[in-house]
Image (cartoon, rainbow, N blue to C red; front, top):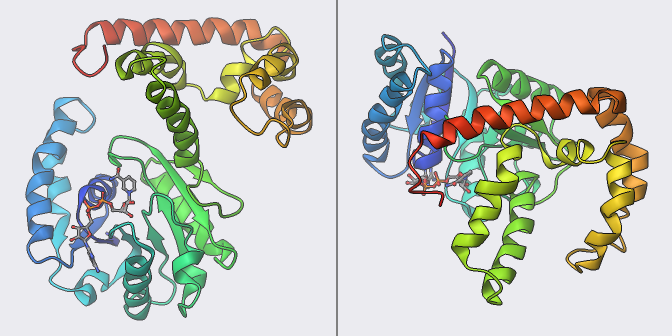
Length: 315
Ligand SMILES: NC(=O)c1ccc[n+]([C@@H]2O[C@H](COP(=O)([O-])OP(=O)(O)OC[C@H]3O[C@@H](n4cnc5c(N)ncnc54)[C@H](O)[C@@H]3O)[C@@H](O)[C@H]2O)c1
């Protein structure tokens, strides 16, 4: 059984530990704060048992998963024999630089060093590190053991072979990988979330809507479709002739809102040059009516499920 080192055992380190152990890896947890890894292991036990409660793992798998996790007393012990390192230290460039330098000095030369950073491009902390070719961002979404999407963000000097190996490892761990072609701070997930939050703060801050009603726009509105199709596929299905038809019909309306830099981001050009080919390959225009029926059926399943859930978190 191969071993993975999880460095930093807060919220995210714990989630990753569950992901790797569930996929059959031995996991060594290390944290700079004494006892943090032991406390983390204890905190994870009920969360992993919960997976069985919701039929996401078999009940008899729970002790096996927990049995694959160990606490390392120091970095050397954590990294000894590890095939991959996932760093989950605090979100600070200086700390990332220090931890990554130490990891690079100890880990075997071919071992990839992935960071969970929420928004710092890896080149900002690993440029001066000897093994910078094996450093990259591998960004999960909290809680990592429940949300499958993972962003893989190489630096300009990350070895392509490292990117492919990390991608394969994540697929083996049943993650849905989003591989960026080049670095950008905030990557994709937090840039999208940031754009949405910026507008949400504006709308609530100016008194146009309450936070509670604004939240309904997502959990009783846009978010329902987003749980099984992204915004690009959503608009492709929202006009009879697909995404370029959508942009022709509604692009001008969005421009009128004065939200973004529509002068520099030409929706029609991007739709014609990129989106039409990619989205039509997945859903040809002739199949849009069928895809709409499929979407509606998925929504019905989701609505039925939501009706059985507590309304506490989502009014
Ligand atoms: N919390 C989120 O929602 C979220 C989501 C995705 C990614 N992230 C990213 O994951 C990383 C960890 O976030 P978190 O929420 O788990 O933080 P956290 O504060 O819960 O955990 C950080 C852990 O790192 C430990 N640590 C500090 N210095 C260390 C060192 N030199 N070596 C080893 N361990 C060290 C701390 O003792 C602590 O246990 C951050 O980069 C964060 O941006 C967070």
